[in-house]
Image 1 (tube, rainbow, N blue to C red):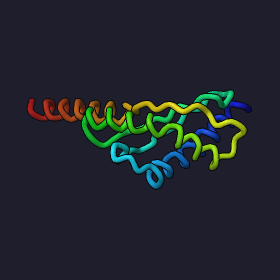
Image 2: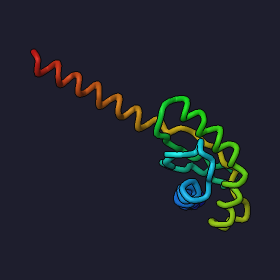
Image 3: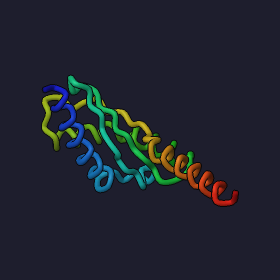
Length: 118
């Protein structure tokens, strides 16, 4: 049962976090960020937000610095919006699945191109 609650809290955090990043964060380093998911521990003490950032490695690093700097504000806003007794500690991690998927798609295209040339 706690696992279902953690999933529900994660989904709510994802929605609210996306809204906060779009509307409330004014840091120019935090642009073009998409929250792809939030994993919350069963005890609701820790949460990891998975994000994607449009741009190169430098922009990704700058975005992470901006998010870390705004973490206190973000956590406070999340606490107001999701109404938990204690807002989970928040960390950010890059979601590599999109890049991984793009790489696989590129490899498959190359294989198909080689097959049609033979």
